[in-house]
Image 1 (spheres, rainbow, N blue to C red):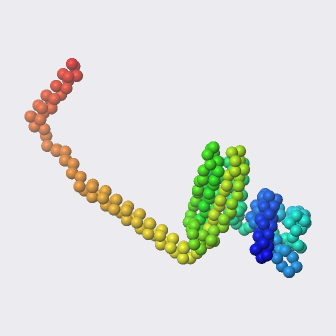
Image 2: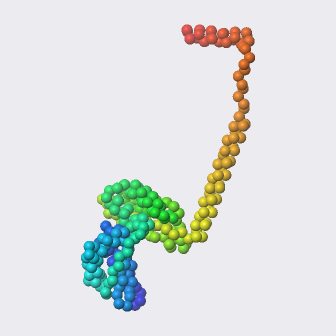
Image 3: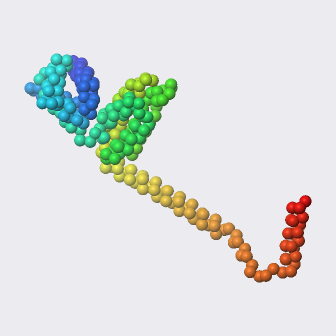
Length: 253
């Protein structure tokens, strides 16, 4: 019985999530949190533009409350709207923005590069974006883009903010996966700094070796013979005159 109730609650949460995503896509919808109290069901909606969720005079949120009662059978839903302080660090909002750009016909590579730059400037430790589908051709393929530092296994990987979204284009569906790491564990940060320092030291060492080899090769080159300032002898002048005469005769022939 417990398992069935757990499954039922998660299905309802998924349905509410999909409904809110469609209703408030223009408001920069992120996600919803639902918790039960003895007297009500608390529903917290996170969005980039909370004013669009609330509506003028609270009309939109009142209508949403009635919808949750009638359509999703929620008992006494108490709605609260929270603003996402930094949308560029919210994987769901970032994924939705990528999908919006692709569906409007923008070049997906330009959209991705702009997104990576914006997310890193917002203060992320790392970001990875994966796209699958018909990306400008008849054959489906997967492309990966990343910036910064990410971990894909262990405890740090569990702290990644993940989101999935789907873009509908003429050639079919394109799946978008976004992973953002905002807070890096201290031990991981220390290990990364050590690794970066070791890589830099190795690069500096290789550069010093190459510079030393170039200097040594320059030293090993035979010195150029200096031009003599002594006057030419009669024999040298005669030889030069003979060569000039032969060249003129060949030219006349």
